[in-house]
Length: 173
Length: 121
Image (tube, rainbow over all chains, first blue to last red; front, side):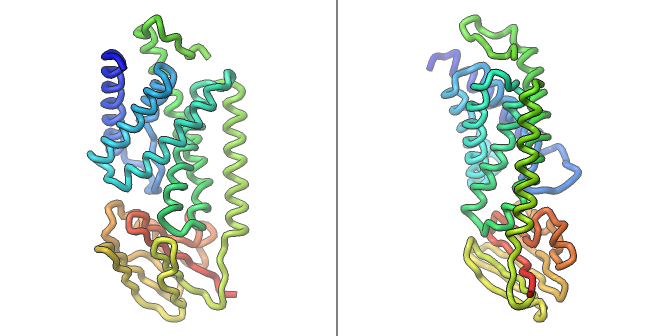
């Protein structure tokens, strides 16, 4: 891992942490557990499209670890990790399809994130009622995934002139 | 957004609706009388008939939940968990259990406590 990569991951982890914190300050009109905008996901999307998957995985693990220490606590970090891992795997799979845009990748990632969190919750408590809640989380994932996907698309567009020539982006989808 | 993105959205929404319908049809618990069943982790902790209204305290390893059981249903009175979502989930009654997002359940994930309203036959 060269200095350039280390610096880049460091900046992105910082950005993801700040977005995760800012998101906590936005009041939602409803108090539903597990539903949030997922602004930090825009950083992961940036990573997926501009770096290797290994570096993006490192980015996700560091973000989960640090936000666990700073805000969420150990159990919160476990939920974030299971959601983040499933979401990254699904997003990497969806990126293989050329006719799915970054918005579609973001939507599948957000839904996978919510499913991953429910799977983790199933290890903790009685699960039958959680299955009832899963559809709610899937629909909310579609909405929040679309929002963060559109944001990520525009961020990538705005930053694309900084892209080093040796990394050919798959942005022009 | 591309055409495939819309296909993806439709597929996910379809899966969500089928999961909702299947869940509502198959996950409802029944027993002899209408009862509140309290779970600690995934094991049954206590089963109380609604004919016997009372306040139940579940306490383990410093985790405390106070549950009010009434003739109509139950609600979480007090919890020392950090997010307090369980208090926001309100009351579960026979009348509202089909409309609630959590169905017949109240969950306190941090304290690993869950309560289900089981319909009497």
